[in-house]
Length: 202
Image 1 (tube, rainbow, N blue to C red):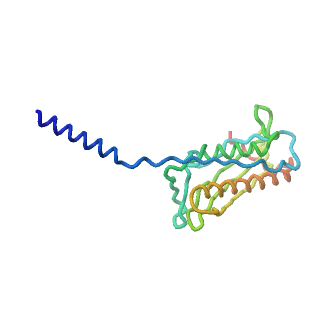
Image 2: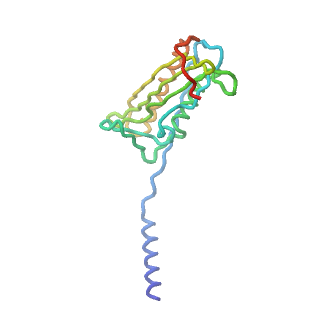
Image 3: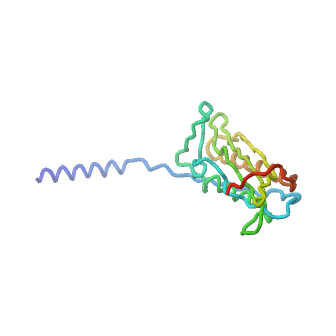
């Protein structure tokens, strides 16, 4: 029995020693998108504000992991280890779009047009250089009539200016900045003219 106690103490000592020399766990990194205020809308052709709806997207884009693909396997998405957005890309987009719309963004339950997004891509393409890949379809509709006022596809692939994830995040920021600028231009040009009628998604 005494011998067993000695062996147990030796084992515990070795375990503690092994734990003491183990390398520290990798640190998590969190990234946010923060854009300076863009130019305001030149005009507002609508008779009511716009409500930015929660984007439609595949499940992975509703998570916070930074995603990537490789050029030889663009259909296979990967999560970058220990790299996260501060919020899911779908939520980041809604916040940034509301900021760009400013006073034209509906906040409460008042009558409003609906800006419906379908997020297709929000991932890095690893390579030399790596790229930020962002693609989204935008539809602006009047919910009471189902009238479609705007329907556009936006797609951007912005090369990273350097190596590493921080340069990739800056490329994502530039892609979203270009998108918001293009969307503001298209909203300025839109009119209360029905392109076609569509059923409500609700």
